[in-house]
Structures are given as C-alpha cells and as structure tokens.
Length: 97
Length: 496
Image 1 (cartoon, rainbow over the protein chains, first blue to last red):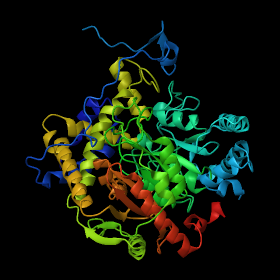
Image 2: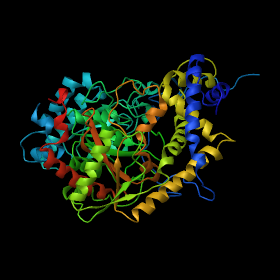
Image 3: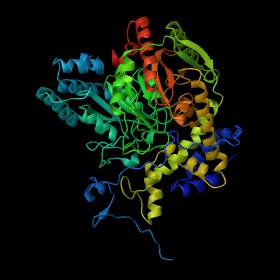
Image 4: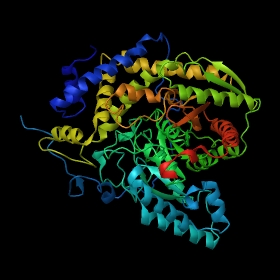
C-alpha cells in the first residue's frame, strides 16, 4: 500500500476539503491505486537530467509599465458571495485564543 | 436537415459574402438546431440566443455598410465553458462556479468577436477540464451524437458533440492531456492542439498552466484551420504566449500534400489495450499516406510510455495550486459557517466533484516535502526525456502519426468511477502536451466492432502547426474520394 486512509485524511485537510467519512472510504483506495501507477516514473534512469517545468523556455517576460483601463470596484466585486463597504466580506480569519 | 447547418464554415462565409444568406439566418438556423436536438445531446450549458442574434445582425449591418469583416464573420462558434465571456456565465463544468458571470473577457473570444464571429453558447466539459468523457461535469454528461448511450470524450466533449451534431460549425476547446484531440476522435470530427503558447490563455480558467492549450474544432480540416488562425497569435496579456508569427495553417489546409514527406509511426502506440478496429483503421491510414507518396518509417520514442504517469503527477500538482483560488471568498459558491478556514473546506467539499478532489489531493501529495523529488521532480525529468524523444524523432521525420485513442467512444458509466481506466483514454495524446508541440486529430474511418469513429493523430514540431494541416488535408481528400462523402454522413439517428 502506498498511502493509508489516515494519510489521505491528512491530504484532505491540507487541501481544505471537508471530506465525509464515506468519501474517504471511497477515495483513499483510489488514490492508493493512482499513486502506485504514477510511481512508474521512478523506473526511469534520469540521473543528471534537468527538470522541465514548462516547454517554451521563456523566462522573465516583461512589458512596459503603462497605465491601462482596469476593472472598477463594482466589477471586481460582482461575483463576491458577500460585500460590505466596497470590500470582500469574509468569515472571521483570526480566532481569539 | 436545414442546408445552412450542414454547410462548412468556409461555404457559409462565401454564401454570406455573396449575399445569398444573412448572418442572422445562419445563426437562427443553428439556434433552431440546438432547440431541436440539444435536449438529447446536452452539448450546451448555456445558449446565448439573443446575444448571438444581435452579434449576427451587427455583422449584417457592417457588411451592408461595407465595413471590414474577419474571415469568420457571421459564423457561429460554440465556446467551451472555461473561456470567460462577459455576456455569458462561466462555470468550467463545476458547481463551485454555478451562475458566475466573469467581469472580463478572454483574449480569444475577444478576437473572435472583433472579427465578427458569433458566440452561440457555452459547452459542457469535465469539471475544470479534468476528464475524458464529460462525466465529471457538475451538470450531467454530454452524449456522443453517433450513439447517445456513449460518451463524446472529454474534457471538451460538449464542444465536440455540438460540432458533430451540426449545432455549430466550429467550436473552441482546450487541450491539456488530449482534451481536444480525444473528443474530436470519438465524435468523428477534426480537432487541433496548437503549439503551446501559440494561442492565448488569458481568460481561460487554469487547469494545468504549463500544459493548457486552447484550440479549434471543425467538421473538416479547412474549417478547423480557419478557426485556428483566427484565435491564434501573440498576446501581451499571457506571459507564456509565444511572440512569433502564426504558422500559415489555412494556406496549408488549402494545399494538402504528403508527397516526399517523411512520416514516422510511433512504435510505442500499439499492442495490448488497443482495440483491433482502431488499429485496423490506423494501419489503413498509414498505407494511404504511403500511397500518396509519403516515406513512412517506424520511430521509437522510448520514454513515451512514461508520459501518462508523468502527466498524472505534473497536471495534478498544477491543479492543486490553481484550484486553491476557489475558496469561497471572492467569487463562486460559499457554504458553511465558522472560521474562514472552515468555510473554505466546506465550500470546496460542496463545490468540487470527485475527480477534482482526487487530483487536488494527488497534487498536494506529489508536491509535499519528502515526496517532491520522487514524484513531481522525477516527472519533470521525464518531461525533459520526452522532449528529447520528440527532438530525435523530428531529426529523422517531418511528422509523427499514431492512433488518437486506444479505443472508440465507450458507454456512459463504464469508466466513470475507475480513474485509471479513464486516464488511459489519453495515452497517445499526452506526449505532445508535455512537450508543447502541435498535434491534430482527424477521422480515419469506423471501427468494425462498434461502427464508431476512429481518429488519426498527426504530431508536428513546435510552431510547425501548418505541417499538420498539409498532412490532414491530403488524408481528408483521399478518404473523401474513397468513401464518396464525409465520414460524419454515416452517423445515424440525430443526424439523419
């Protein structure tokens, strides 16, 4: 086994997914199966081979810093679940100890 | 069927230019077709009826006034539901974005609109483009117009199904691991993954940013090239966009020719797991290429067999990062109570489907300290080796060919909860995504076992997209001579 149910529950917490117990029962063996399959990359002799993160080879693409039209506050907030005083209204972030 | 919906985009364009038909009539005919068949095909998540007609009437006005128009003026185009367009919802096939109206427009839809193309609606897809069947959509799966009990492929399955059922002559998709070529093959139409960076990702909701490539669908090679050219080109809004001229794809599509061309058959893409009917049609297509004067050789790309596992580490890793933005704070769904962190976890639990959750967790695993080198790092090295395989191959041949998929369209439900079986649908398409070069899928006949379409994949070097169309146009013309009609004419039922 490459990954346990407890480890999958930990991954779900890291991923901010409030999985149900039934989902964990279902997804944990599937992830185990997938991880075993993708581990096949470890067979490849790749000593000294540089990694490729993207195929174009472009680095540090800059443009002139010129003012241009952008979204209005109303447009930027148009999809927000909650708005107050022209800002995104979010649940409490800091909790008193 | 109404003649206006069976005409190609090129024919419609000529007819509108000659004043034989108006853009409003063309759009109306397609909206009528959608109304007649889409309750069965379920290709569209949103039909922009009024907006499309208004765009079409504006084209008619401009034409009457003698104002300049683009080559796709008045042509309806269906849009995969991950391109932002300000007058339509964008859901990405996910419940987490249900009802979201984007405040900005993607570069590609902006360019198409500016040229007079009519955006007729948004098409169904696997959630955030993760899947090969549209069964991972949060809004139900689309159907294959050849057989409504089978999947249309995915993730751009709604776009492929719309084009194959004459609901639109052209459609936009994106290809990250095969999401244009695989549904094109399964639906018997043409679809292209352009060179990565050749088409802008600005306003295309990100799945795996180093792989995502917007591209065209059409019912024939020339139409597909027309959309390819119209949507492509450098975009300062996308820092991965390539600042180079668009390859002359339309010119190539008008002059199909493989005589003297060196064509390599990828030896790794055959054997166990390949449906006999798929291999039979592929072998015939290779024989056809030889009869048309191509020099065919077998080419080994030894690392292609590791492309699938490498992809299923790289893409989920990028997904786990890209989908972190769906946190219920700034747009989309918000569910639950408690702290921000608790609301995030409940929102993502409610809004994402099973495949999105699997891939987010897989990516989180592959990137976590202690596993990074063994998984993500190793996959990136494999990516280098796959690029090297392509470089070596293109030192010997002009293009590579293979089947597009190991099998024809599978029955709905057959692989829906079997991730590994589903992933195999992209076995032959993934290498070009990892390497960033161009590839096309075009119909090469029907499998004997199930009478479902089979696709021929042609792969060309980076920025040699025109070579795909030179080959595809020659193959298409030769098959049309042999069959006496386009393959899609053999689809029964809906298209009768």
